[in-house]
Image (cartoon, rainbow, N blue to C red; front, side):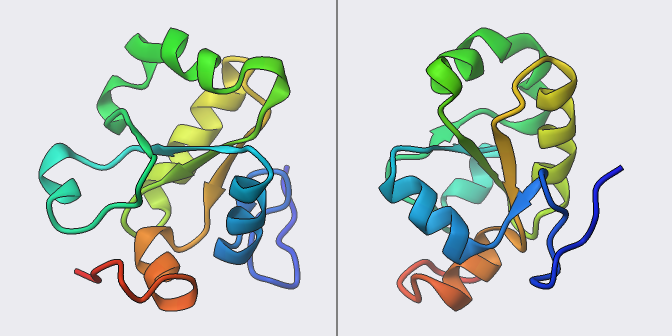
Length: 118
């Protein structure tokens, strides 16, 4: 069972946008699990796109993102789908996966106002 940290994230499962930004600067990969139509609303450059409904069938691609234990940051709109994807990835042995708490909406508010909120 995960514990919630002082930042309101589940330890071992989530990263705040600021933590995620530092992880990306250190070589983490970003996995966007939103639907294709949502990418037209807002996106973060360099993200790999695999909709949540395709996670199970595209595990090989995600394993490549996580090669060598590299962190994989999972992103959706508000953080619920990315948390479900993160739990699924952990169940499949990809323990380096972390959901970006608050999703792209919180990313826009805290990190990059140039990313459109929708």
